[in-house]
Image 1 (tube, rainbow over the protein chains, first blue to last red):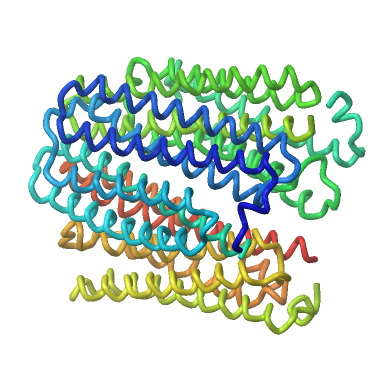
Image 2 (spheres, each protein chain N blue to C red; image 1 turned 60 degrees about the vertical axis):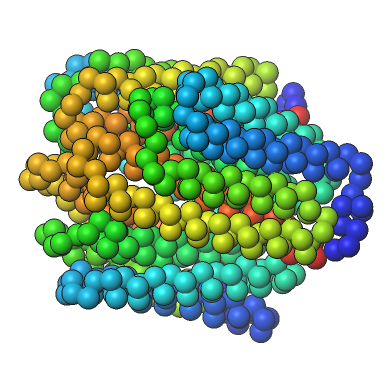
Length: 208
Length: 208
Length: 208
Protein backbone atom coordinates (compact mmCIF):
# COMPACT_ATOMS: atom_id res chain seq x y z
CA UNK A 1 0.00 0.00 0.00
CA UNK A 2 2.99 2.29 0.58
CA UNK A 3 3.34 4.38 -2.50
CA UNK A 4 -0.33 3.89 -3.39
CA UNK A 5 -0.73 7.55 -4.41
CA UNK A 6 2.76 7.77 -5.89
CA UNK A 7 1.94 4.93 -8.32
CA UNK A 8 -0.83 7.04 -9.83
CA UNK A 9 -0.61 8.86 -13.13
CA UNK A 10 -0.56 12.67 -12.92
CA UNK A 11 -4.12 12.92 -14.18
CA UNK A 12 -5.27 10.51 -11.47
CA UNK A 13 -3.89 12.87 -8.86
CA UNK A 14 -6.49 15.38 -10.01
CA UNK A 15 -9.22 13.17 -8.60
CA UNK A 16 -7.63 13.50 -5.16
CA UNK A 17 -7.33 17.27 -5.55
CA UNK A 18 -11.06 17.40 -6.31
CA UNK A 19 -11.93 15.10 -3.37
CA UNK A 20 -9.90 17.38 -1.11
CA UNK A 21 -11.76 20.43 -2.41
CA UNK A 22 -15.01 18.60 -1.66
CA UNK A 23 -14.01 17.60 1.89
CA UNK A 24 -12.72 21.13 2.64
CA UNK A 25 -16.05 22.50 1.43
CA UNK A 26 -17.88 20.21 3.87
CA UNK A 27 -15.70 21.44 6.76
CA UNK A 28 -16.52 25.03 5.79
CA UNK A 29 -20.24 24.19 5.66
CA UNK A 30 -20.32 22.55 9.09
CA UNK A 31 -18.28 25.40 10.62
CA UNK A 32 -20.63 28.03 9.14
CA UNK A 33 -23.59 26.03 10.48
CA UNK A 34 -22.18 25.98 14.03
CA UNK A 35 -21.46 29.73 13.73
CA UNK A 36 -25.06 30.30 12.68
CA UNK A 37 -26.35 28.51 15.80
CA UNK A 38 -23.84 30.09 18.21
CA UNK A 39 -24.59 33.67 17.25
CA UNK A 40 -28.03 33.37 15.69
CA UNK A 41 -28.12 36.90 14.31
CA UNK A 42 -28.34 37.87 10.63
CA UNK A 43 -29.81 34.41 10.14
CA UNK A 44 -31.02 34.74 6.50
CA UNK A 45 -27.59 36.05 5.43
CA UNK A 46 -25.74 33.22 7.19
CA UNK A 47 -28.11 30.64 5.69
CA UNK A 48 -27.42 32.21 2.28
CA UNK A 49 -23.66 31.70 2.82
CA UNK A 50 -24.23 28.01 3.56
CA UNK A 51 -26.40 27.75 0.43
CA UNK A 52 -23.43 29.18 -1.55
CA UNK A 53 -21.21 26.42 -0.15
CA UNK A 54 -23.81 23.86 -1.20
CA UNK A 55 -23.72 25.27 -4.77
CA UNK A 56 -19.93 25.12 -4.64
CA UNK A 57 -20.23 21.44 -3.67
CA UNK A 58 -22.52 20.79 -6.66
CA UNK A 59 -19.91 22.39 -8.90
CA UNK A 60 -17.09 20.14 -7.59
CA UNK A 61 -19.33 17.05 -7.77
CA UNK A 62 -20.17 17.83 -11.37
CA UNK A 63 -16.45 18.27 -12.18
CA UNK A 64 -15.68 14.84 -10.67
CA UNK A 65 -18.53 13.12 -12.56
CA UNK A 66 -17.44 14.76 -15.83
CA UNK A 67 -13.83 13.73 -15.21
CA UNK A 68 -14.95 10.20 -14.32
CA UNK A 69 -16.88 9.86 -17.57
CA UNK A 70 -13.91 11.06 -19.61
CA UNK A 71 -11.17 9.08 -17.86
CA UNK A 72 -10.31 5.58 -18.95
CA UNK A 73 -7.98 4.58 -16.11
CA UNK A 74 -9.07 5.77 -12.67
CA UNK A 75 -7.01 5.71 -9.44
CA UNK A 76 -9.50 3.29 -7.87
CA UNK A 77 -12.80 1.62 -8.74
CA UNK A 78 -15.10 3.79 -10.79
CA UNK A 79 -18.10 2.97 -8.59
CA UNK A 80 -16.12 3.87 -5.44
CA UNK A 81 -15.22 7.27 -6.92
CA UNK A 82 -18.90 7.76 -7.72
CA UNK A 83 -19.91 6.73 -4.18
CA UNK A 84 -17.22 8.82 -2.46
CA UNK A 85 -18.20 11.89 -4.44
CA UNK A 86 -21.95 11.30 -4.00
CA UNK A 87 -21.82 10.76 -0.23
CA UNK A 88 -19.66 13.87 0.31
CA UNK A 89 -22.19 15.83 -1.73
CA UNK A 90 -24.97 14.44 0.48
CA UNK A 91 -23.19 15.83 3.58
CA UNK A 92 -23.16 19.43 2.33
CA UNK A 93 -26.73 19.08 0.96
CA UNK A 94 -27.94 18.02 4.41
CA UNK A 95 -26.05 20.81 6.20
CA UNK A 96 -27.78 23.25 3.82
CA UNK A 97 -31.14 21.53 4.38
CA UNK A 98 -30.75 21.86 8.15
CA UNK A 99 -29.66 25.52 7.91
CA UNK A 100 -32.48 26.54 5.57
CA UNK A 101 -35.09 25.16 7.97
CA UNK A 102 -34.24 27.85 10.56
CA UNK A 103 -35.47 30.46 8.08
CA UNK A 104 -38.27 28.35 6.59
CA UNK A 105 -39.69 27.48 10.02
CA UNK A 106 -39.10 30.98 11.42
CA UNK A 107 -37.18 29.53 14.37
CA UNK A 108 -36.94 32.29 16.99
CA UNK A 109 -34.46 30.73 19.40
CA UNK A 110 -32.11 27.75 19.42
CA UNK A 111 -33.08 24.86 21.70
CA UNK A 112 -30.43 23.76 24.23
CA UNK A 113 -28.35 20.84 22.94
CA UNK A 114 -28.57 21.86 19.27
CA UNK A 115 -25.09 23.39 19.33
CA UNK A 116 -23.70 20.24 20.98
CA UNK A 117 -25.06 18.18 18.07
CA UNK A 118 -23.71 20.66 15.50
CA UNK A 119 -20.25 20.40 17.10
CA UNK A 120 -20.25 16.64 16.68
CA UNK A 121 -21.23 17.17 13.03
CA UNK A 122 -18.39 19.70 12.63
CA UNK A 123 -15.92 17.28 14.25
CA UNK A 124 -17.06 14.50 11.89
CA UNK A 125 -16.44 16.71 8.84
CA UNK A 126 -12.95 17.57 10.12
CA UNK A 127 -12.22 13.83 10.40
CA UNK A 128 -13.61 13.20 6.89
CA UNK A 129 -11.31 15.91 5.60
CA UNK A 130 -8.30 14.40 7.42
CA UNK A 131 -9.15 10.92 6.10
CA UNK A 132 -9.37 12.24 2.52
CA UNK A 133 -6.05 14.06 2.91
CA UNK A 134 -4.32 10.98 4.32
CA UNK A 135 -5.54 8.36 1.86
CA UNK A 136 -1.92 7.71 0.87
CA UNK A 137 -1.16 6.81 4.53
CA UNK A 138 -3.66 4.00 5.14
CA UNK A 139 -2.95 3.64 8.87
CA UNK A 140 -3.64 7.32 9.51
CA UNK A 141 -6.76 7.26 7.33
CA UNK A 142 -8.10 4.17 9.13
CA UNK A 143 -7.61 5.96 12.47
CA UNK A 144 -9.84 8.76 11.14
CA UNK A 145 -12.43 6.17 10.01
CA UNK A 146 -12.60 4.74 13.54
CA UNK A 147 -13.02 8.24 14.98
CA UNK A 148 -15.86 9.01 12.51
CA UNK A 149 -17.65 5.85 13.64
CA UNK A 150 -17.34 6.99 17.25
CA UNK A 151 -18.70 10.45 16.39
CA UNK A 152 -21.65 8.90 14.53
CA UNK A 153 -22.57 6.86 17.61
CA UNK A 154 -22.30 10.01 19.72
CA UNK A 155 -24.51 12.05 17.36
CA UNK A 156 -27.05 9.23 17.36
CA UNK A 157 -27.13 9.24 21.17
CA UNK A 158 -27.42 13.06 21.35
CA UNK A 159 -30.16 13.13 18.70
CA UNK A 160 -32.24 10.51 20.53
CA UNK A 161 -31.84 12.41 23.81
CA UNK A 162 -32.82 15.71 22.18
CA UNK A 163 -35.95 14.19 20.62
CA UNK A 164 -36.96 12.51 23.90
CA UNK A 165 -36.52 15.90 25.67
CA UNK A 166 -38.53 17.58 22.94
CA UNK A 167 -41.50 15.28 23.55
CA UNK A 168 -41.09 15.59 27.33
CA UNK A 169 -40.75 19.37 27.51
CA UNK A 170 -42.65 20.82 24.59
CA UNK A 171 -46.42 20.54 24.44
CA UNK A 172 -46.79 22.41 21.15
CA UNK A 173 -46.98 19.79 18.37
CA UNK A 174 -45.93 22.33 15.73
CA UNK A 175 -42.66 22.94 17.61
CA UNK A 176 -42.20 19.18 17.90
CA UNK A 177 -42.64 18.74 14.13
CA UNK A 178 -40.15 21.49 13.33
CA UNK A 179 -37.39 20.57 15.81
CA UNK A 180 -37.68 16.81 15.36
CA UNK A 181 -36.98 17.33 11.66
CA UNK A 182 -34.06 19.71 12.29
CA UNK A 183 -32.41 17.22 14.68
CA UNK A 184 -33.00 14.33 12.27
CA UNK A 185 -31.53 16.19 9.29
CA UNK A 186 -28.43 17.08 11.38
CA UNK A 187 -28.05 13.47 12.50
CA UNK A 188 -28.43 12.22 8.92
CA UNK A 189 -25.56 14.56 7.92
CA UNK A 190 -23.33 12.73 10.44
CA UNK A 191 -24.62 9.36 9.10
CA UNK A 192 -23.44 10.47 5.65
CA UNK A 193 -19.99 11.30 7.08
CA UNK A 194 -19.90 7.67 8.20
CA UNK A 195 -20.93 6.56 4.70
CA UNK A 196 -17.98 8.55 3.32
CA UNK A 197 -15.65 6.86 5.81
CA UNK A 198 -16.99 3.42 4.82
CA UNK A 199 -16.07 4.10 1.19
CA UNK A 200 -12.60 5.30 2.24
CA UNK A 201 -12.08 2.16 4.33
CA UNK A 202 -13.20 -0.06 1.47
CA UNK A 203 -10.91 1.69 -1.05
CA UNK A 204 -7.93 1.33 1.30
CA UNK A 205 -8.57 -2.36 2.03
CA UNK A 206 -9.04 -3.21 -1.66
CA UNK A 207 -5.76 -1.52 -2.56
CA UNK A 208 -3.83 -2.89 0.43
CA UNK B 1 -21.77 8.82 -30.56
CA UNK B 2 -23.68 9.23 -33.81
CA UNK B 3 -25.03 5.85 -34.66
CA UNK B 4 -24.91 4.80 -31.00
CA UNK B 5 -28.35 3.14 -31.17
CA UNK B 6 -27.79 1.89 -34.71
CA UNK B 7 -24.72 -0.03 -33.58
CA UNK B 8 -26.88 -2.06 -31.22
CA UNK B 9 -28.00 -5.61 -31.81
CA UNK B 10 -31.74 -6.12 -32.44
CA UNK B 11 -32.24 -7.62 -28.96
CA UNK B 12 -30.54 -4.62 -27.38
CA UNK B 13 -33.12 -2.39 -29.03
CA UNK B 14 -35.70 -4.12 -26.86
CA UNK B 15 -34.18 -2.51 -23.80
CA UNK B 16 -34.92 0.91 -25.29
CA UNK B 17 -38.47 -0.13 -26.16
CA UNK B 18 -38.96 -1.13 -22.51
CA UNK B 19 -37.41 2.10 -21.20
CA UNK B 20 -39.76 4.06 -23.48
CA UNK B 21 -42.75 2.12 -22.14
CA UNK B 22 -41.57 2.96 -18.64
CA UNK B 23 -41.13 6.69 -19.34
CA UNK B 24 -44.51 6.89 -21.11
CA UNK B 25 -46.08 5.25 -18.08
CA UNK B 26 -44.56 7.93 -15.84
CA UNK B 27 -45.99 10.69 -18.06
CA UNK B 28 -49.42 9.04 -17.83
CA UNK B 29 -49.10 8.82 -14.03
CA UNK B 30 -48.16 12.48 -13.57
CA UNK B 31 -50.93 13.60 -15.96
CA UNK B 32 -53.53 11.52 -14.09
CA UNK B 33 -52.26 13.01 -10.83
CA UNK B 34 -52.68 16.60 -12.08
CA UNK B 35 -56.17 15.67 -13.36
CA UNK B 36 -57.03 14.31 -9.92
CA UNK B 37 -56.06 17.59 -8.29
CA UNK B 38 -57.69 19.84 -10.91
CA UNK B 39 -61.09 18.19 -10.75
CA UNK B 40 -61.01 16.51 -7.35
CA UNK B 41 -64.19 14.51 -7.85
CA UNK B 42 -64.47 10.71 -7.92
CA UNK B 43 -61.23 10.77 -5.95
CA UNK B 44 -61.02 7.07 -4.94
CA UNK B 45 -61.61 5.99 -8.57
CA UNK B 46 -58.94 8.34 -9.90
CA UNK B 47 -56.48 7.20 -7.23
CA UNK B 48 -57.27 3.61 -8.27
CA UNK B 49 -56.34 4.46 -11.88
CA UNK B 50 -52.97 5.81 -10.73
CA UNK B 51 -52.44 2.65 -8.67
CA UNK B 52 -53.04 0.64 -11.89
CA UNK B 53 -50.31 2.67 -13.63
CA UNK B 54 -47.99 1.93 -10.71
CA UNK B 55 -48.68 -1.83 -11.13
CA UNK B 56 -48.02 -1.44 -14.85
CA UNK B 57 -44.68 0.16 -13.97
CA UNK B 58 -43.80 -2.80 -11.73
CA UNK B 59 -44.58 -5.12 -14.62
CA UNK B 60 -42.25 -3.26 -17.02
CA UNK B 61 -39.52 -3.02 -14.36
CA UNK B 62 -39.73 -6.75 -13.78
CA UNK B 63 -39.48 -7.39 -17.54
CA UNK B 64 -36.32 -5.24 -17.73
CA UNK B 65 -34.70 -6.96 -14.73
CA UNK B 66 -35.52 -10.41 -16.17
CA UNK B 67 -34.13 -9.38 -19.55
CA UNK B 68 -31.03 -7.95 -17.89
CA UNK B 69 -30.36 -11.19 -16.04
CA UNK B 70 -30.72 -13.23 -19.23
CA UNK B 71 -28.76 -10.99 -21.58
CA UNK B 72 -25.01 -11.37 -21.94
CA UNK B 73 -24.28 -8.27 -24.01
CA UNK B 74 -26.21 -5.16 -22.99
CA UNK B 75 -26.47 -1.85 -24.90
CA UNK B 76 -24.76 -0.02 -22.04
CA UNK B 77 -23.43 -0.77 -18.56
CA UNK B 78 -25.49 -3.33 -16.67
CA UNK B 79 -25.51 -1.20 -13.51
CA UNK B 80 -26.69 1.86 -15.48
CA UNK B 81 -29.60 -0.17 -16.92
CA UNK B 82 -30.44 -1.26 -13.39
CA UNK B 83 -30.22 2.32 -12.11
CA UNK B 84 -32.21 3.81 -15.01
CA UNK B 85 -34.97 1.27 -14.57
CA UNK B 86 -34.99 1.55 -10.78
CA UNK B 87 -35.17 5.36 -10.68
CA UNK B 88 -37.99 5.47 -13.27
CA UNK B 89 -39.87 2.95 -11.12
CA UNK B 90 -39.31 5.20 -8.10
CA UNK B 91 -41.00 8.10 -9.95
CA UNK B 92 -44.25 6.23 -10.55
CA UNK B 93 -44.15 4.72 -7.02
CA UNK B 94 -43.94 8.22 -5.54
CA UNK B 95 -46.74 9.59 -7.75
CA UNK B 96 -48.90 6.71 -6.50
CA UNK B 97 -47.78 7.35 -2.90
CA UNK B 98 -48.77 11.03 -3.20
CA UNK B 99 -52.14 10.20 -4.83
CA UNK B 100 -53.08 7.52 -2.28
CA UNK B 101 -52.56 9.97 0.58
CA UNK B 102 -55.54 12.08 -0.57
CA UNK B 103 -57.78 9.08 0.17
CA UNK B 104 -55.84 7.81 3.19
CA UNK B 105 -55.84 11.26 4.85
CA UNK B 106 -59.44 12.04 3.79
CA UNK B 107 -58.31 15.32 2.21
CA UNK B 108 -61.45 17.42 1.66
CA UNK B 109 -60.04 20.23 -0.46
CA UNK B 110 -56.81 20.94 -2.33
CA UNK B 111 -54.57 23.63 -0.85
CA UNK B 112 -53.59 26.47 -3.21
CA UNK B 113 -50.22 25.87 -4.85
CA UNK B 114 -50.55 22.08 -4.92
CA UNK B 115 -51.56 22.08 -8.60
CA UNK B 116 -48.63 24.35 -9.45
CA UNK B 117 -46.26 21.79 -7.89
CA UNK B 118 -47.98 18.90 -9.70
CA UNK B 119 -47.57 20.74 -13.03
CA UNK B 120 -43.82 21.00 -12.47
CA UNK B 121 -43.79 17.26 -11.72
CA UNK B 122 -45.79 16.59 -14.92
CA UNK B 123 -43.39 18.78 -16.93
CA UNK B 124 -40.40 16.89 -15.48
CA UNK B 125 -41.90 13.52 -16.55
CA UNK B 126 -42.48 14.86 -20.08
CA UNK B 127 -38.80 15.86 -20.22
CA UNK B 128 -37.71 12.44 -18.89
CA UNK B 129 -39.79 10.81 -21.63
CA UNK B 130 -38.24 13.07 -24.30
CA UNK B 131 -34.74 12.34 -22.98
CA UNK B 132 -35.37 8.58 -23.10
CA UNK B 133 -36.76 8.85 -26.65
CA UNK B 134 -33.77 10.89 -27.82
CA UNK B 135 -30.93 8.88 -26.32
CA UNK B 136 -29.60 8.25 -29.84
CA UNK B 137 -29.33 12.05 -30.33
CA UNK B 138 -27.05 12.99 -27.41
CA UNK B 139 -27.31 16.76 -27.93
CA UNK B 140 -31.08 16.69 -27.76
CA UNK B 141 -31.06 14.37 -24.75
CA UNK B 142 -28.59 16.59 -22.89
CA UNK B 143 -30.88 19.60 -23.52
CA UNK B 144 -33.68 17.64 -21.78
CA UNK B 145 -31.31 16.83 -18.90
CA UNK B 146 -30.60 20.55 -18.36
CA UNK B 147 -34.34 21.31 -18.42
CA UNK B 148 -35.02 18.56 -15.83
CA UNK B 149 -32.41 20.12 -13.55
CA UNK B 150 -34.15 23.48 -13.90
CA UNK B 151 -37.54 21.94 -13.08
CA UNK B 152 -36.11 20.19 -10.01
CA UNK B 153 -34.82 23.52 -8.68
CA UNK B 154 -38.24 25.04 -9.33
CA UNK B 155 -40.10 22.23 -7.55
CA UNK B 156 -37.73 22.57 -4.61
CA UNK B 157 -38.46 26.30 -4.40
CA UNK B 158 -42.24 25.78 -4.65
CA UNK B 159 -42.21 22.98 -2.07
CA UNK B 160 -40.29 25.12 0.45
CA UNK B 161 -42.69 28.03 -0.09
CA UNK B 162 -45.74 25.77 0.32
CA UNK B 163 -44.40 24.30 3.57
CA UNK B 164 -43.53 27.76 4.94
CA UNK B 165 -47.09 28.92 4.07
CA UNK B 166 -48.51 25.81 5.70
CA UNK B 167 -46.80 26.62 9.01
CA UNK B 168 -47.76 30.29 8.70
CA UNK B 169 -51.42 29.83 7.79
CA UNK B 170 -52.54 26.57 9.34
CA UNK B 171 -52.79 26.24 13.10
CA UNK B 172 -54.04 22.63 13.05
CA UNK B 173 -50.98 20.37 13.54
CA UNK B 174 -52.81 17.39 12.02
CA UNK B 175 -53.30 19.32 8.77
CA UNK B 176 -49.62 20.33 8.88
CA UNK B 177 -48.53 16.69 9.26
CA UNK B 178 -50.73 15.56 6.33
CA UNK B 179 -49.90 18.34 3.85
CA UNK B 180 -46.20 18.55 4.69
CA UNK B 181 -45.92 14.88 3.78
CA UNK B 182 -47.93 15.26 0.56
CA UNK B 183 -45.73 18.16 -0.61
CA UNK B 184 -42.55 16.28 0.31
CA UNK B 185 -43.60 13.11 -1.53
CA UNK B 186 -44.41 15.18 -4.65
CA UNK B 187 -41.06 16.97 -4.45
CA UNK B 188 -39.23 13.66 -4.02
CA UNK B 189 -40.91 12.44 -7.24
CA UNK B 190 -39.30 15.39 -9.09
CA UNK B 191 -35.96 14.59 -7.37
CA UNK B 192 -36.23 11.09 -8.81
CA UNK B 193 -36.81 12.56 -12.30
CA UNK B 194 -33.47 14.32 -11.80
CA UNK B 195 -31.88 11.01 -10.74
CA UNK B 196 -33.16 9.48 -14.02
CA UNK B 197 -31.65 12.39 -15.96
CA UNK B 198 -28.30 11.95 -14.16
CA UNK B 199 -28.16 8.31 -15.31
CA UNK B 200 -29.03 9.36 -18.88
CA UNK B 201 -26.30 12.01 -18.84
CA UNK B 202 -23.78 9.52 -17.50
CA UNK B 203 -24.67 6.88 -20.14
CA UNK B 204 -24.35 9.45 -22.94
CA UNK B 205 -20.99 10.80 -21.72
CA UNK B 206 -19.53 7.30 -21.27
CA UNK B 207 -20.56 6.32 -24.81
CA UNK B 208 -19.51 9.63 -26.39
CA UNK C 1 -27.78 -24.24 -11.53
CA UNK C 2 -27.81 -27.62 -9.80
CA UNK C 3 -24.55 -27.88 -8.00
CA UNK C 4 -24.20 -24.09 -7.84
CA UNK C 5 -23.02 -24.17 -4.21
CA UNK C 6 -21.08 -27.39 -4.68
CA UNK C 7 -18.98 -25.76 -7.41
CA UNK C 8 -17.73 -23.21 -4.92
CA UNK C 9 -14.33 -23.23 -3.29
CA UNK C 10 -14.27 -23.97 0.45
CA UNK C 11 -13.48 -20.36 1.28
CA UNK C 12 -16.49 -19.22 -0.76
CA UNK C 13 -18.70 -21.38 1.42
CA UNK C 14 -17.75 -19.10 4.29
CA UNK C 15 -19.67 -16.27 2.67
CA UNK C 16 -22.82 -18.39 2.83
CA UNK C 17 -22.14 -19.28 6.46
CA UNK C 18 -21.90 -15.56 7.24
CA UNK C 19 -25.07 -14.76 5.26
CA UNK C 20 -26.88 -17.47 7.22
CA UNK C 21 -25.66 -16.01 10.51
CA UNK C 22 -26.96 -12.65 9.35
CA UNK C 23 -30.40 -13.96 8.32
CA UNK C 24 -30.73 -15.95 11.57
CA UNK C 25 -29.90 -12.78 13.49
CA UNK C 26 -32.73 -10.96 11.68
CA UNK C 27 -35.20 -13.73 12.58
CA UNK C 28 -34.12 -13.43 16.24
CA UNK C 29 -34.57 -9.65 16.09
CA UNK C 30 -38.08 -9.78 14.63
CA UNK C 31 -39.12 -12.50 17.10
CA UNK C 32 -37.80 -10.47 20.06
CA UNK C 33 -39.68 -7.44 18.71
CA UNK C 34 -43.00 -9.33 18.52
CA UNK C 35 -42.34 -10.65 22.06
CA UNK C 36 -41.77 -7.09 23.24
CA UNK C 37 -45.16 -6.00 21.86
CA UNK C 38 -47.08 -9.08 23.02
CA UNK C 39 -45.98 -8.85 26.66
CA UNK C 40 -44.97 -5.21 26.94
CA UNK C 41 -43.38 -5.56 30.37
CA UNK C 42 -39.71 -4.95 31.22
CA UNK C 43 -39.68 -2.83 28.09
CA UNK C 44 -36.22 -1.16 28.48
CA UNK C 45 -34.59 -4.58 29.09
CA UNK C 46 -36.25 -6.13 26.04
CA UNK C 47 -35.29 -3.13 23.89
CA UNK C 48 -31.72 -3.57 25.17
CA UNK C 49 -31.73 -7.23 23.98
CA UNK C 50 -32.79 -6.11 20.49
CA UNK C 51 -30.02 -3.49 20.52
CA UNK C 52 -27.55 -6.33 21.30
CA UNK C 53 -28.81 -8.22 18.22
CA UNK C 54 -28.32 -5.08 16.16
CA UNK C 55 -24.69 -4.87 17.39
CA UNK C 56 -24.29 -8.56 16.54
CA UNK C 57 -25.53 -7.77 13.03
CA UNK C 58 -22.95 -4.97 12.69
CA UNK C 59 -20.27 -7.46 13.69
CA UNK C 60 -21.30 -9.99 11.01
CA UNK C 61 -21.65 -7.24 8.38
CA UNK C 62 -18.15 -6.03 9.17
CA UNK C 63 -16.81 -9.60 8.86
CA UNK C 64 -18.42 -9.96 5.41
CA UNK C 65 -17.07 -6.60 4.19
CA UNK C 66 -13.57 -7.46 5.44
CA UNK C 67 -13.73 -10.89 3.80
CA UNK C 68 -15.02 -9.30 0.58
CA UNK C 69 -12.11 -6.88 0.46
CA UNK C 70 -9.59 -9.67 1.01
CA UNK C 71 -11.07 -12.26 -1.37
CA UNK C 72 -10.12 -12.32 -5.02
CA UNK C 73 -12.64 -14.85 -6.30
CA UNK C 74 -16.12 -14.50 -4.80
CA UNK C 75 -19.04 -16.99 -5.10
CA UNK C 76 -21.10 -14.38 -6.96
CA UNK C 77 -20.81 -10.75 -8.02
CA UNK C 78 -18.96 -8.59 -5.54
CA UNK C 79 -21.62 -5.84 -5.71
CA UNK C 80 -24.39 -8.39 -5.07
CA UNK C 81 -22.57 -9.64 -1.95
CA UNK C 82 -22.25 -6.02 -0.82
CA UNK C 83 -25.95 -5.39 -1.50
CA UNK C 84 -27.15 -8.63 0.13
CA UNK C 85 -25.12 -7.92 3.23
CA UNK C 86 -26.12 -4.24 3.36
CA UNK C 87 -29.87 -4.84 2.97
CA UNK C 88 -29.88 -7.57 5.65
CA UNK C 89 -28.09 -5.15 7.96
CA UNK C 90 -30.77 -2.53 7.19
CA UNK C 91 -33.49 -4.98 8.35
CA UNK C 92 -32.01 -5.44 11.84
CA UNK C 93 -31.18 -1.71 12.09
CA UNK C 94 -34.83 -0.85 11.41
CA UNK C 95 -36.14 -3.45 13.88
CA UNK C 96 -33.87 -1.84 16.49
CA UNK C 97 -35.01 1.65 15.45
CA UNK C 98 -38.67 0.63 15.85
CA UNK C 99 -38.04 -1.04 19.24
CA UNK C 100 -36.06 1.87 20.67
CA UNK C 101 -38.89 4.28 19.89
CA UNK C 102 -41.15 2.60 22.47
CA UNK C 103 -38.70 3.71 25.17
CA UNK C 104 -37.76 7.03 23.57
CA UNK C 105 -41.41 8.04 23.10
CA UNK C 106 -42.48 6.62 26.49
CA UNK C 107 -45.22 4.56 24.82
CA UNK C 108 -47.58 3.43 27.58
CA UNK C 109 -49.73 0.95 25.67
CA UNK C 110 -49.61 -0.80 22.32
CA UNK C 111 -52.19 0.31 19.74
CA UNK C 112 -54.38 -2.43 18.26
CA UNK C 113 -52.99 -3.71 14.96
CA UNK C 114 -49.34 -3.14 15.87
CA UNK C 115 -48.80 -6.81 16.72
CA UNK C 116 -50.44 -7.86 13.45
CA UNK C 117 -47.91 -5.72 11.57
CA UNK C 118 -45.01 -7.10 13.64
CA UNK C 119 -46.12 -10.66 12.81
CA UNK C 120 -45.96 -9.91 9.10
CA UNK C 121 -42.45 -8.53 9.67
CA UNK C 122 -41.48 -11.68 11.62
CA UNK C 123 -42.91 -13.88 8.83
CA UNK C 124 -40.92 -11.93 6.22
CA UNK C 125 -37.66 -12.47 8.16
CA UNK C 126 -38.39 -16.23 8.41
CA UNK C 127 -38.82 -16.30 4.62
CA UNK C 128 -35.59 -14.32 4.10
CA UNK C 129 -33.80 -16.86 6.30
CA UNK C 130 -35.29 -19.78 4.32
CA UNK C 131 -34.33 -18.14 1.02
CA UNK C 132 -30.74 -17.62 2.22
CA UNK C 133 -30.54 -21.25 3.40
CA UNK C 134 -31.89 -22.58 0.10
CA UNK C 135 -29.80 -20.57 -2.35
CA UNK C 136 -28.39 -23.82 -3.70
CA UNK C 137 -31.95 -24.95 -4.56
CA UNK C 138 -33.08 -22.11 -6.83
CA UNK C 139 -36.69 -23.31 -7.16
CA UNK C 140 -37.18 -23.35 -3.41
CA UNK C 141 -35.45 -19.99 -2.97
CA UNK C 142 -37.62 -18.41 -5.68
CA UNK C 143 -40.75 -19.68 -3.89
CA UNK C 144 -39.56 -17.83 -0.78
CA UNK C 145 -38.96 -14.69 -2.87
CA UNK C 146 -42.57 -14.78 -4.11
CA UNK C 147 -43.83 -15.20 -0.54
CA UNK C 148 -41.73 -12.22 0.64
CA UNK C 149 -43.30 -10.08 -2.08
CA UNK C 150 -46.75 -11.13 -0.88
CA UNK C 151 -45.86 -10.27 2.73
CA UNK C 152 -44.53 -6.87 1.69
CA UNK C 153 -47.83 -6.07 -0.02
CA UNK C 154 -49.68 -7.19 3.10
CA UNK C 155 -47.52 -5.07 5.42
CA UNK C 156 -48.06 -2.09 3.13
CA UNK C 157 -51.85 -2.57 3.30
CA UNK C 158 -51.82 -3.00 7.11
CA UNK C 159 -49.57 0.05 7.59
CA UNK C 160 -51.84 2.26 5.47
CA UNK C 161 -54.90 1.05 7.39
CA UNK C 162 -53.22 1.66 10.75
CA UNK C 163 -52.21 5.20 9.78
CA UNK C 164 -55.70 5.99 8.45
CA UNK C 165 -57.18 4.69 11.74
CA UNK C 166 -54.65 6.76 13.67
CA UNK C 167 -55.82 9.97 11.98
CA UNK C 168 -59.48 8.95 12.36
CA UNK C 169 -59.37 7.90 16.01
CA UNK C 170 -56.67 9.94 17.67
CA UNK C 171 -57.08 13.66 18.12
CA UNK C 172 -53.75 14.18 19.89
CA UNK C 173 -51.20 15.25 17.24
CA UNK C 174 -48.28 14.18 19.44
CA UNK C 175 -49.62 10.61 19.50
CA UNK C 176 -50.10 10.78 15.73
CA UNK C 177 -46.47 11.86 15.23
CA UNK C 178 -45.14 9.06 17.44
CA UNK C 179 -47.27 6.17 16.11
CA UNK C 180 -47.09 7.20 12.46
CA UNK C 181 -43.32 6.98 12.70
CA UNK C 182 -43.37 3.63 14.51
CA UNK C 183 -45.66 2.11 11.85
CA UNK C 184 -43.56 3.55 9.03
CA UNK C 185 -40.27 2.24 10.48
CA UNK C 186 -41.84 -1.25 10.86
CA UNK C 187 -43.13 -1.15 7.28
CA UNK C 188 -39.73 -0.03 5.99
CA UNK C 189 -38.18 -3.07 7.71
CA UNK C 190 -40.49 -5.30 5.60
CA UNK C 191 -39.56 -3.26 2.48
CA UNK C 192 -35.91 -4.07 3.22
CA UNK C 193 -36.78 -7.80 3.44
CA UNK C 194 -38.13 -7.41 -0.10
CA UNK C 195 -34.88 -5.68 -1.14
CA UNK C 196 -32.97 -8.71 0.22
CA UNK C 197 -35.23 -11.04 -1.77
CA UNK C 198 -34.66 -8.99 -4.94
CA UNK C 199 -30.91 -9.46 -4.59
CA UNK C 200 -31.38 -13.20 -4.01
CA UNK C 201 -33.59 -13.47 -7.12
CA UNK C 202 -31.06 -11.55 -9.19
CA UNK C 203 -28.14 -13.74 -8.01
CA UNK C 204 -30.08 -16.91 -8.81
CA UNK C 205 -31.15 -15.75 -12.28
CA UNK C 206 -27.62 -14.60 -13.19
CA UNK C 207 -26.17 -17.96 -12.17
CA UNK C 208 -28.97 -20.05 -13.73
